[in-house]
Image 1 (spheres, rainbow, N blue to C red):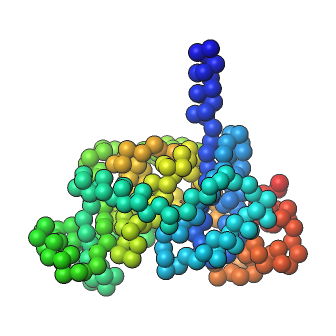
Image 2 (image 1 turned 180 degrees about the vertical axis):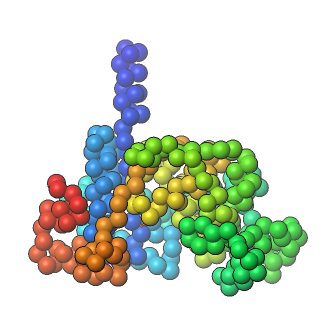
Length: 293
Ligand code: GLU
Ligand code: ZN
């Protein structure tokens, strides 16, 4: 009795849960199809579960009609996913709660800088350290006094919230994470410096929402493109400070077109919709996307 309950528990723990998390800023192309099929295959290998998440926190770039088109394209491609689909714009309270916890720990600070302010600060700093996205934020607002922060807020100045990455790292110590294919990785938790966790125009950022959602959805294997490999370092830091479970990660290659360029939203010709309209079958498109079944 106890033994069978234990083995059921083990089975449950071993189930792989993956997700595909597109942003509805355009129609899906072959690169997305590869990513979705990769996530499904990773789940299928472990008799696992495949979930979907719509990453629509950016109100300036996301559109509801693209969400509908994404669901239709994925169904046409032959994918099935569990309901309900998690739609990020319906969960700002979850991101707020995470920000509140970070704030209580003293790990956030308001940043009033405009892009231009940051560019000027970087130029003034001489050889400012660089991260995967360019120069790191030089930390001007981290050094503002409490009263300056309050004054600027009271004056109605817009601000983003940044993570004090040095303080966060000090709190949790050295970290690592596991890449399914490349093995144990030492977390370079300050690779992106003091990342923005809530933007001026939307109360969450990609790094925050993705980390919180992977935990809430119980994702055990995060699958995504090579281009997001570096982002995992900062997600690992957020997991540690927020005391969230740590999934494993697998990164897939990025498909390229005949000229060797990565597929992008600008490539109208290779959207799933245009391929379907040109008479391709779902199976043919799965093959074009690098999967033979
Ligand atoms: N929404 C992100 C994108 O479309 C993917 C996020 C992730 O898989 O972590 O690039
Ligand atoms: Zn600033």
